[in-house]
Length: 313
Image (cartoon, rainbow, N blue to C red; front, side, top):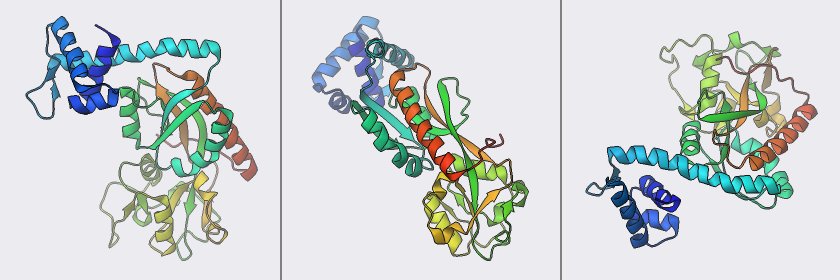
């Protein structure tokens, strides 16, 4: 049994196809198939049910894949140990970021991080929280930036910052004349929301104390995957919305008059750098944390924003 054989097994399990798996592993399909066959012969079990299309894992194969993933991840530790001993910060690093953080945070830190650590080949992908958790566990991501806490024993979290919620209230709305907003003022029935699957949406609903799960009384119900779209719809008088603080930095001067802050303590979301408990590539994770935290502290200090409490759980 070799680590290479286990790596091939993981590739087939992921792609459910020997040809695609071979392409991902940069070997010929016969080579990959032969190595997996050797492993099955040695173990005297079938890992894959080849009669199914697409190929499926057998019951014992599912257990083998779980253990194989652990072994392959642990094998990467050897190179990690060497890199850390040498103080080397480089190599490929796959980072996932949730949609409500990606457009504001990434431009703030990416250029600075690349300049400080030119040997890191950073691959960034926008993913939902559920997709991030799955990919971290499967070893397809090295780290991610997401709203926390996740309360997953396989995922470790390092808090980067607490980001306040800010109300975007158009002229003519019942709350537009309020200088400060209380969470008790919020009503789900005149709130424009992100579509289901966004953790920011869940946070907004948590804040709307009057929400009891009843149907919306409005003549329409609108959800969007874009905060920018919600702001535009709000400008048309279709309701108010909540935006994460960093999004307000890009709002034009004309629209800034529609921003209303909460009375202290301001509700906020916790944003963290998260990674698998195996703690691979920690030197890069720590470099990311240092870069992002420094930039965020500067932005918050410049804007003089008070950040106090995370979202109510």
